[in-house]
Amino acid sequence: MNSQRSAPGNYTIQNLFGTDSDTETDDSITSESELEDRTTDEDSMDAHGDTVGFSGEHAWEGGARTSTSASMTAVTSALQETVEDAETIAHQQDLRKRIMAIQSNDGFSAMEKAKKIQELMTSNWNTTQRSQSSRAALASNKLEHRRADFSVVTDHDKQRTYHDKDALILGCKHYQRAAKLQAHCCGKWYTCRFCHDEVSDHNIVRNLTSTMMCMYCSTVQPAGRDCANVRCGKRVAKYYCPECKLWDDDPRKNIYHCHDCGICRIGKGLGQDYFHCKRCNVCMAISLKGNHKCIERNLESDCPICGEYMFTSTTTVIFMPCGHCIHYKCHQEYIQTSYQCPTCFKSLANMSEYFKRIDAMLAQHQMPPEYATTRSHVYCNDCENKSFAKFHFLYHKCGKCGGYNTKVLRTCQAGEEDLILGKQVGVGGVVAAAEGGAGEDSGGGGEAGGLVTSQFDISPPFFSEDQMDVEQRRGSLAVEGGDGAPMVAGNGYEQNH
Image 1 (cartoon, helix red, strand yellow):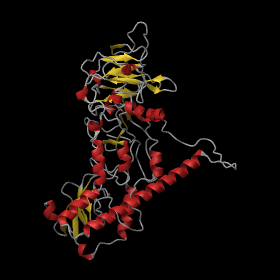
Image 2 (cartoon, rainbow, N blue to C red):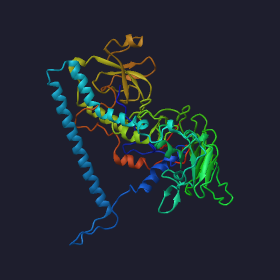
Image 3 (spheres, rainbow, N blue to C red):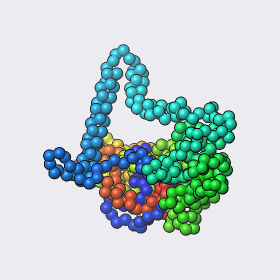
Image 4 (cartoon, rainbow, N blue to C red):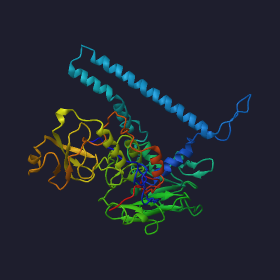
């Protein structure tokens, strides 16, 4: 089976190797419970002041030397990458020494050596898993400590929280709003459900929220858009959804509730800039109506890389050309070593130029004579046809479409093809596949994307930075989830039925 390889997400892919590209899309869909994390990512950066850079010119004592922010940032970035590379090399060298020490220890049996080496190789992953599973143990708000009397309001509960304290904008790092909500589960007061979930060993079901507190007058009241205190009467949020219990006072946002999705989404509304695809069960940019590949309840699945449920994910999600979904961040890391969809294994771009380089490489790398009569029966992930190809350690060429995105079904000797296909076929010329794929007995073979050292550059990454930079400017399909910051976003690929 091939190593899985995919193309860049959140942009339209047509040709990644300098050929003419077709229609570009510049669309976006956004999802609200999913909506919260665009705000989470962007606003938390502002709130915590994490954005650090050089601005203007920098002066040193005793001279008039100056440096622009761009050059300083480039130097800093280069130094950081050098340090990271050095740390990686040092870690790999240390790991190699420790493995060799285990192998040279005669006191261990072969099984004990294998076990210790496996534990050593997976130590970083195990550490990460332990840190992720420690949420319940480290949570300051445990469900077992829920309030006995939900009507009790402390002075701490009444304290105002700020989205931007310098500008005196009420809210939290996730939202602008002048209201706190009372968690239905534990009775504690938080500015939003994310603030609650971050410090708790349990999650809020936002639809069950029924009580809010106005941060202007500290009046506890039923959830609503305006303060019920007649002496206050202030509006606590520009947008309020009684179904999602979502408050958002950000004047830059347009938010609407989609009844089919059951959540709020960023946008002007259905029929204006978005439509709801009944089959995919997601809101999309209206320009994609009739111009995307439908997959039944597409977003209601786990990310094929990290395993997180994508419909309610707070991380940007994109649609790949085959129609399957994946987190944008997972995708960007994944395509460094793979060009196939991790779900269906189809190529995520026009790989013809890459396949031509494999052809050129194979023309100069002949197989040993003992494999001259060996054949491989292969299945092409792209054209979905079966055919025969000359045996190769890494690459097998599809006899139908000429691509190398194939997997080997079985290997046989010349003259045995009829036993596989159920009919007599020729050995030296064209071999017909039972499923309808014509297989030219051409050179090359193996599962697509294998690495071979040669004068031809066929190693990853498969997509250059320039190609990715151009493609990332193309259509974006943002989906927003039910809480005011982006939970799901994405398409960027051109979709065709």
